[in-house]
Length: 256
Image 1 (cartoon, helix red, strand yellow):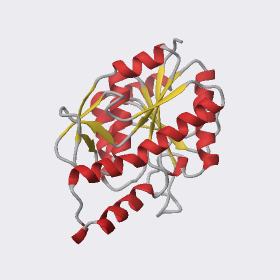
Image 2: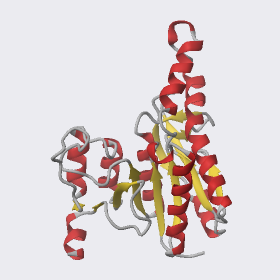
Image 3: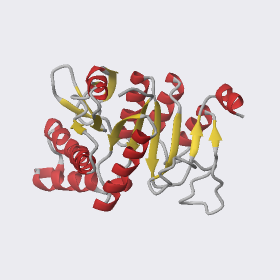
């Protein structure tokens, strides 16, 4: 199968029920029907990570678990999302395979519970794409050189998605719980205006000011690596219309 690669990142809210997982699978299938080759990155569903943090604290005297075991436990939230979504895709006839971050080529460096993406080997993803299989990747995690799993901190799934898009030369879609990027946080300001297009530097400024649509580190990475972004809600039309396109000013001018 040939065609442009698109990285689709599904946030936890978009995978919070069986119906939402099925809708995510339908969206991925719609991209395939338009000739694109999706690579999917998932967050843990709903409040899964918060529940795992509480369970870890509850079983350890003093509430401070060992870092290695904490990372292995926390990574299971994304692993479960990836397996469920891959199963949903297979159920509608779309070949798919769930992959942990390290299996997808995400290499991390640093300490447990505070890793950072060092680099991405895109070969495992390209091999699956060439075989017509949709890779469904656990975000928020990568493999260290010694084989250990490191989590990437809150918002790490956004960073995973942008890093994969940069390595694959692809556009990245952030599928979340707001309809678009707004000039202010729509959760806090009812008068916030949606933005159809914006420059990546403007997104970095908004993210660093506290807008919770794209994680600041992911926004900075998209700016540095010139990764085109789209941001829209999980309930947006499967046609792909709406949301916010984040592209350099030159690209916006060419598209006008």
